[in-house]
Structures are given as C-alpha cells and as structure tokens.
Amino acid sequence: MSSGAEPARGADGGWSRRRFVGALTGAVAATALPAPAAPPAEPADAAGVGSPPTGGPPSPAGSPSSGRSPAPTARRLFLGTYTSVDGGGKGIGLATYDSATGAIKSTGTVTGVADPSYLAVHPDGHTLYAVDERPEGGVTAVRLAGDKVLGTRSTGGSGPCHLSVHPSGRWLLSANYGSGSVAVHPIDASGALGERAALVKHTRPAPGPGQQGPHAHQFLTGPDAGHVLAVDLGTDTVYTYRLDTSEGTLAEVSQAHTRPGAGPRHLTFHPGGRFAYLANEVDNTVVVCGYDRTSGRLTLGNAQSTGTGTGTNYPAQFLVTSDGAYAFLANRGANSLTRYAVEADGARLRLLDTVPVHGDFPRQIAFSPDERLLFAANQRSGTVSVFHVDGSSGGLRLAGEPFASPVAVCALPL
Image 1 (cartoon, rainbow, N blue to C red):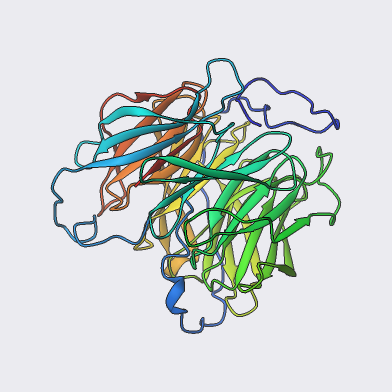
Image 2: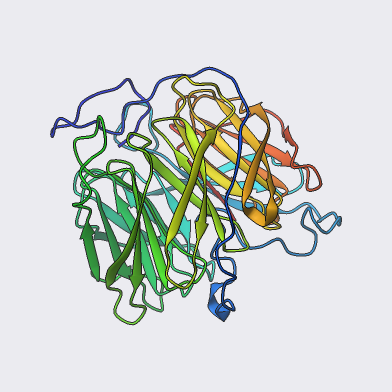
C-alpha cells in the first residue's frame, strides 16, 4: 500500500507503495501526435467511457459549458483511506458537499472495509466498489441505499490499488499493484460481486530500471468498450486486452512501451476517443497517446513536462473535461495541479500553469458530476481540497479551507 511514508523495501526486495518524496517547480513543453484513422461509430453503451473512473458522466445542462447556474444541492461524497496505518480511517468515509460552494460535511463511516484506497461507482449509481489494498487483496461492494456492505471477493493478487466498472455495468476491473496482475469480477443485478472470472499476471516484458517486478496500477475500459487497458508501472507498459463481455475473460492484443524507467501510473482518455494522456510516475513526465478504437492499440508520443521541473514529483492522475478543452494533473511531490489546454482535437497538450493544491501529496483528483468542482485527496496532510472550475478558461479557485479526512487517498463525489 502507499501511506506516503518514507521509501521502504517490500518483502520481495521491490519498492512497496510507501516510497514518495518531494519535488521542485518548473518548465513548459508540448507534444502533438498525428491522429489515428477516424473511429467507427460509438456503441450505444459506451457513452462516457473515456471519462476517468471517478470523474462522473458528461456534463448535463447547468454544467460549465452551458452557462447556466445549478441550484445549490447537498450531494454525497465518499472518501477512501487506509485503515491499517497510524492515524488512518475506520473504513469508507461518508460526507456530503454543497454543489454550489464545495463545502464538505462528514456524515459517518462505512465500517468493515479494509484499506479502501480507491473507489468507483456503478453506472446505475446504486452500488459503490472499493479495493481492499492488502497483501491478500480484495474488492468490496457497498449498496448505497443504507450503505450496506454486500460482500468482498478476492482479487487473486496483492495490494490492489485501482478499480473501475465496465460501462455495461456487468464487470468490475481491478489492478493488483503488489503482484502485477489484473482481475475481472462479474456484477450481478443487485450490484454484488461474483467469483473472479479472469486473472492475468504481467510476465513480459522484464521489469524496468529500479523495479523488481510488475506493478499493475490501473485497469480501465477503452472508448470502444470492447477493449480494456492495464497500466503497469513496473514493466513500463500499457497492455490492451479484449474483454469477452459474455464470459469476462481477457485476451491480450497489444502492448505499448514507455521509455525505460518512466513508471506509467494513470491513463485518461480524451472524450473524442482517439487520444489519451498518460502520467509517468517515476520520471515525472506525461505523454499524449493515440488510440485505435478498432484494434485497441495505443501509440505513445514523446514525453513532456508536468510543469514541476526535473526533480522528483510523482505525478498521480489526469482529469479531462467532458468537452475536451482542458486537462488537469495532480502532482504529489510539488503539491500542485497542472492545467493544460487540450488542442488539435485532443492530439496536443499545452501547459498553461500550475496551481498549489493547498495540501500535501495529492494522490487522486475527481470532478463533481457537473464539473463545476474539482476534488483533490491529499494523503499526507489528511485533507480534501475543493476547487471551483471555470468552464471557459479551466481556471481553478480554492473553495474554502480544505476538509480534514484521515489519510485521504480518494475522494468520489456523486
């Protein structure tokens, strides 16, 4: 797991997820990629697949792009933490937030969930899913009506750190960081999880410089919904699999390799579906990627700046607005958010600026469903920062004092 403590070696001699330190501020770069062939028509069930796992659906009327102001509403917020570290949480944190002001109020805890470090919600909005980031990893389902724990299933690996729900709502995808594997679980009509349908361990290529083995860090669905992609920090590779949507099995179709030692962590698709943006944790870079929706093949462009200089920074997660105009990157070492203008229909990121996150070690970021607010979970300071997002400029403005939440590693606003 990653508590944000000083670097430590795991039992296998490789880095555990407790290994992060600070960084500097810095420079600007931009990279463009030629567009892949025009994509086929998007399947009816794939709408919104390109948005990040915790980002919410495309903007409705009243979103930043519409120019209309929604009425203030108390909405639900779920908070991920570590339960096995000093000062950690007791389970999944429950809260509400004001959709106009961003103010957060605690409402309790869902107990009985171990180390719920990453959260995702079912497309129908009725069920929440959490990883149990422990040596014997699991995934847990929680019915939101009554916040009832429905049960936990083994991921077949260690230290699961990410999960997402296939847009069909039938499959849960999870990434086991410790063992470098990805798993698929069926989801039944109640939202509960069935026994694992697939488990694939990354055995090739060999681990990158400084790595002792594969470390799967993310598992998400591509814009075509037929392909799923696994980002592996340890092997410097993004794997594409074809998902059998009837059986839940996986068949590898391609690999995309970063430069050695990049340490890819998080991939987010542009809403057009032809490009994606990859955050490289170890070498402090980002990459614009082309995506072929027919084959599922990802093509990586040149590495470019996070705007934080050349020091240690460990970029964490990308968000892209649903209109495809702006992208945001969380920087844990620099404790900042990088703002990019998205140009050339998604083929280019132009670095605009960096904004202080007003917390320490922003592990994860997420939009509210209308994208008027951006939430940053700051692991080391145990806080959640909330920003107002200007829909016309992508500008960020802090929405009051950050909210205290023990070892905050994930914030999921609904």
